[in-house]
Amino acid sequence: MGMTGAPIRRVVIVGGGTAGWMTALALTRMAPPHAPTVTLVESPEIGTIGVGEATLPTIRHFNVWADVDERSFVRETQATFKLGIEFRDWREPGHSFFHGFGDHGPEIAGLSPYHQLIRLRLGETLDTFSLPAQAARLNRFQPPSSDSRSLASTYSYAYHFDASLYAQHLRHLAITAGVEHVQGRIVDVEQAGESGLITRLRLEGERSVGGDLFVDCSGFRSLLLGQTLGVPFEDWSHWLPTDRVWAVPCAGTDTIEPYTRSTAGTAGWRWRIPLQHRIGNGHVYASAFEDDQGALDALMRNLDGEALAEPRQLRFKAGHRRHFWVGNCVSIGLSGGFLEPLESTSINLIERGISQFVQLFPFGGLHPVLADEYDRTMINAFAGIRDFIILHYRLGRRTEPFWRAMRDQPIPDSLAEQIALFEQTGEISIRDPESFAEPSWAAILFGLGARATTFHPQADCEPRDAIERHLARGRDLITQHVGQMPPHRRFIERLLGETGPRP
Ligand SMILES: Cc1cc2nc3c(=O)[nH]c(=O)nc-3n(C[C@H](O)[C@H](O)[C@H](O)COP(=O)(O)OP(=O)(O)OC[C@H]3O[C@@H](n4cnc5c(N)ncnc54)[C@H](O)[C@@H]3O)c2cc1C
Image (cartoon, rainbow, N blue to C red; front, side, top):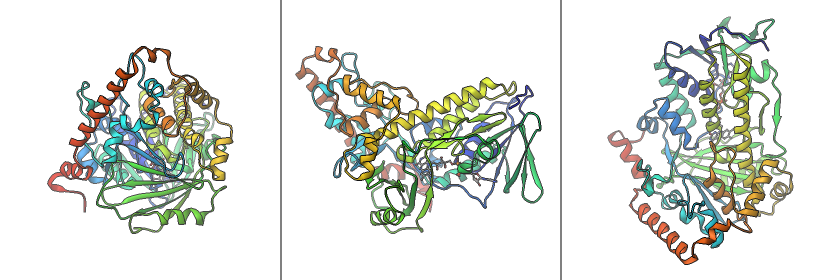
């Protein structure tokens, strides 16, 4: 595809879902005089995917950078705070563990604490060393402290929110910041003869929008990258065979839990995401192992309150487009790929796409090195998250055919190496720290009962009873701290002050 050295003045975003509006808002934060004009085209008739309610803590960096005020964001999107994910029945029915956004204590004798936990056979009690896990257990929440010497600085948090309200909130901010908003369905895409660059979008009703650079945020349709430019899809469904979901909101309960719950089932898992005004629920499953009616029944049977809408079914496939940037088309969001929502990673991938795109923005023209670098980053990000998600299925001991198949099938070499390293040395090697760092991998490995046969020899240098005392002190401090945190619901009410939650 041809490249040009012409400056980029007009950026056109296709799609008004989370990806489209986050990208639009981010581009308005680029400094003048180089900042391009931004037009966003969306079709209300096609609509957005309307799910995507749980996030990772990185969303807070995006919000700060894009100047999204936390209090109005929490109010406008019915958001709650998320300290991590509780995994129920994953290892085996009746077992539960927590993946919290925080560490499990400081280094001991220059080594991560996991070596001592292996040495003292305390892996089963990992959650008791996690402040967010303990706070979540008691439904308490308070933001971390910025004082790096404080125990309260050792964790982080993300949000749960209503995806449609989030898109609306961002739309309001982006339009206020100067983004041109065009509503209509794109029916044709024009390309320049020789270069193949996209030049113009044709909308129904004889309208058109031209631009220098096009961002494909058109969702699973992948209107530009997939349909127009024909970029092939790298199919990962042999590794991640879940391919369908039923989703339904239900009435909330008095307690608002500051965490997502993921409960394993016959051929997949179920999410429970508490918002201020309702609970989001979904049942993710592999259609090769569970039929639609069985999946729907399992979802509806387990609701905590009255269903607030008809259940909706969505279909998806794990994988990504082979390229994310081709010529003058850059993909952000579902148009570039999708991995099932087990660890709430799609919006994180959107953030990473946006930050890389802004970093590599082709001020000096469209040079292939920019597209190559963008592809490299996004492919790495997808691969890192893919491995982390597969890990969850790999280690469980459930006995249904789906779970046996997940345990027996080949896994990517990168993950096989990671598991072997842990089992043989107690070390955790992190290849993609921007999504999940060592404490996250540790939470899943220990939580699912992975066994390290040995630990770092230096961990033996300190006497056992001294380490035991040290760890017990750490646990006590966590208990004391968590005891002073307010209930999550009360924290939200206080944050929203007199205005209270949205009606
Ligand atoms: C079951 C499920 C659960 C999920 N849960 C999570 C989660 O917990 N956390 C998380 O981070 N992510 C989650 N995601 C992913 C998340 O929903 C998406 O990443 C996010 O919403 C971004 O979607 P998008 O903006 O790329 O696409 P969409 O929301 O689908 O938006 C596409 C846009 O393109 C427009 N469009 C398409 N074709 C045309 C056309 N011809 N003309 C004009 N406009 C057009 C549409 O109108 C729409 O505005 C989940 C996804 C699924 C499927």
